[in-house]
Length: 509
Image (cartoon, rainbow, N blue to C red):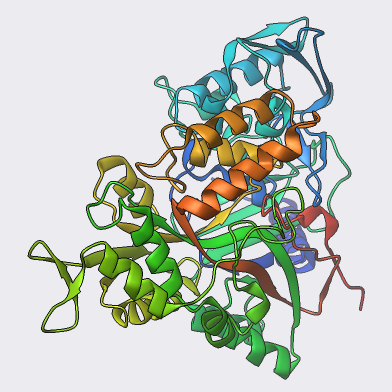
């Protein structure tokens, strides 16, 4: 092989040009958080890809839960409310360059129906493609269908995303960003997709890194190794705010830290046992000491920001350990030699499962352990993976599970409530508990959440959950993130559906 002077010169110029282009390219926006990428399947971890705006669903929602067009530019329901027509965007493309079709949407939704997810709550008879539109036929009216189709588990992927058995082998979606590197479970790099149907984002590329320790995340925020840092514990938020090197952005979420009961457990099946546990917990002291935010002490399941569901006219959950002891004594529990309550020769011992993805959960679990010990209940705290709680629900081994339940991953909380508190309960809701009153009220709201009786139905649900405590509210939730001052346009989504990357831009020097 031989080279001429000109060919070498041309090659050298090409290399120099490439180096110059790389030098000019802006580094990616760096996001750090506690959440690992456990799965690429929408049914398992779909919210991760909607947050990074990689994947989209038929319907979208703004930060106030108002539905807006997603991949469907419009939709309407038939007069009998049994058929919905979704009109697709004509200029939407998958990240492999192929155009979005109604058949692709039908395929994704049919695959989603075969897997765990909120779409199973809809009474769907058939999904079909007709003249480029998507038709969803129902067995009975279901007004929540558009809100349900905004959930991450219903995101639309290209045919090439799926293996023959319907499992997802790669995420080829339609959003403003596409995946360029993925190293599960720790990191992902996404880059701008130039054929996205919307306005091109200003941020060219975004990286996400999962960092398990809250202290490490805080140090990365302070040192500039991260541009946006999620999952800061309250102490770190205070320290970072005082230093002033980054800005703290916060938003109150429709999310509640709660303890999920196995209501079939011998020690928990009586409602007075669950009430006693509630009375033993000092929420005000706990939120002041651990969250540095006493306003977040939960007096009922739904926070005041959920105006349709929060009720000021029901008796609030309170702290009264003496009454807790009285209720437990009335159930036959008596102190043993070590102070732990005994009944029928068995101690009142429970295991509380939680996880460190949200850094406040383990210390709250430890505080609950201490407070329950004071009334004679021995609790072992088990810190593991978040998936262990729904797994324990399904196999029946869960006794207590603590998490932070977001009621607006579907823009209308009613969809989540139907999943959590229907006849069979839900992974993050009731376990071995159901109420005909709650079931009927939820079903009626699903038909028409705007009718004259809607307020009364919601009141029935709230009152019953407050009275029987299938789950125990501990604290409402305020999300904070540390943000570099080099960025502007950063807004936290209270629905936690999206990082709203397309709204951000680098500050001009």
